[in-house]
Image (cartoon, rainbow, N blue to C red):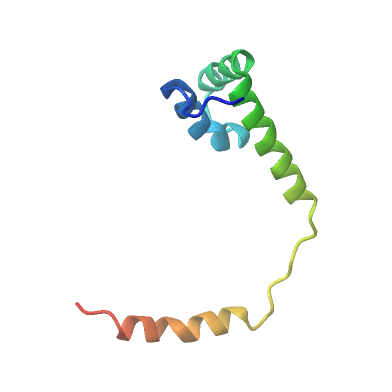
Length: 86
């Protein structure tokens, strides 16, 4: 059974995992996270879950945007500006 509340260290590591997956850290920062993942089964499971999800999403076919999408969005922008009070 999982701990109901992760430790402050795990909470910090879990918040960093998306950036870690994207290789958005220095080698030293990445090593700190890697070491924690080696030692912490709960965080390692969460990391594996995140990477599986991203792999699944990457395997989905790209969805095209209709050529009229930009015009449809832009038609709503002036209306939003009129509703703002300055």
